[in-house]
Amino acid sequence: MFISASRSVYLLRYVTIILILSYHCASVEKLMIKYFEKISCLFYERKNQELFVKQHSSNFEYVLELKDEIQ
Image (cartoon, rainbow, N blue to C red; front, side, top):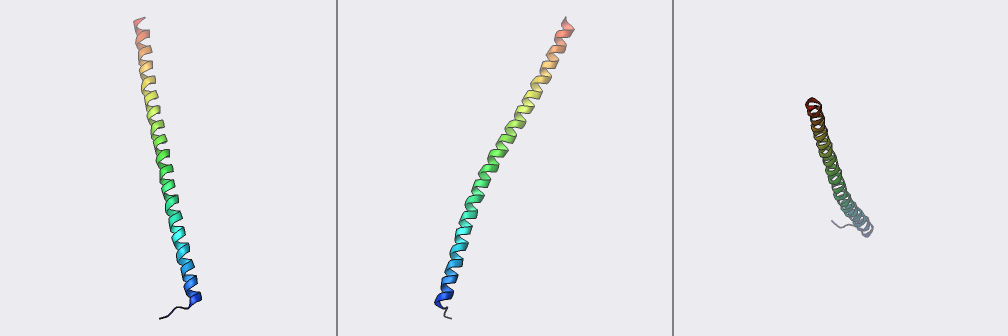
């Protein structure tokens, strides 16, 4: 089956557009993955810092209670 020249040009355009869009989507997906990895790292660091502060503040209250009992 023979495809006319105009149809082959349109087919080539569509294939080119699909390839460009798929490449663009893949690069955007990679950027989004990097972005979400950074966000998750920041989120976990923040949670760890909050836990660290809570642990130390509870220890500090315990030390103050002991100090009051000693006096």
